[in-house]
Length: 195
Image 1 (cartoon, helix red, strand yellow):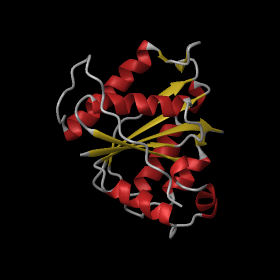
Image 2: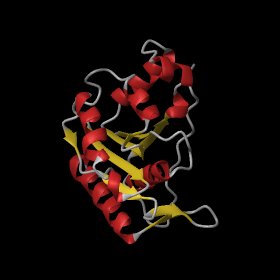
Image 3: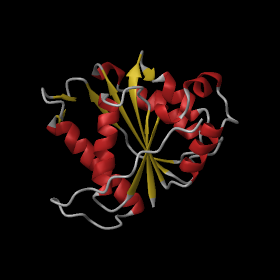
């Protein structure tokens, strides 16, 4: 069963993308296949012009259609989801998320933008047919960051919420198998952008 992680940040090393990968790795330890998607998988011109008929948009729709779970992460800019993520979601079919479990994750500069998860991201997911939207995780810049070596740093409170989010996904779909703590998580080959 495939789980799609959809990164809405243009940066591969952003806080939101790092949290998304962290959750994906936790689910991979339970035997699930993780398929990473992001803005880099669709040419910028397709996103800007909303080219629904482009080969990259068709490939995006096919990959999402094959997934049972979508985990979507976005930085919060000006109290709303990232425009690039919205452009990516606009290339999906009207009911693309029907029957899927969806987990939203967001990061922002302060707790003042916490409600963007509820009033910005979740309504868009719902408009795409999602009816099983799990409680999201919102983290501020003080709660997630990187140390001097570039390793992800997460506060205990955020780690607890991420653990609860992973448990919610597993409760909805179940584990495939557990991987021992010292066993390496299987890595998927990067998927080249189409177009």
